[in-house]
View 1: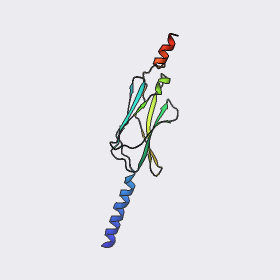
View 2: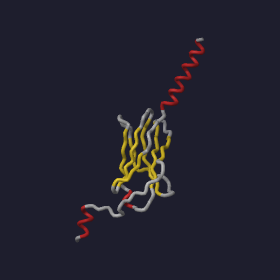
View 3: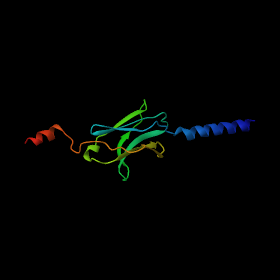
View 4: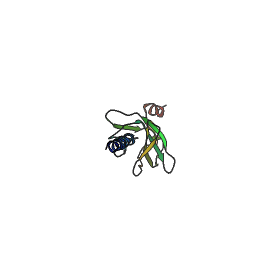
Length: 133
């Protein structure tokens, strides 16, 4: 009897340790806003989480890291991609790389791709003044 209780306890503890690193996320929300793209997500569990890495790819290219986000108490996140104005007519796809404290990585990919309607020329006060020189 004691042996059975020990085995059950061992199984429960092992399952708890294995599931402790799981980062269960809600959907990745990606929307254009002006000359930027807003990436939002919310986590429901973040045990053993080291950080999130937001990645972007254009067309059929490889993903590149664009932002690093540390865990927060409210588990609600928003990243603004301000670099999409540099090119127009491209389709972008985003994903989250979820890095755990033990170095393991999992990915949450955006469903579909986004083609933002952004200006290829970003207007700043300096660029407007330069037009009149």
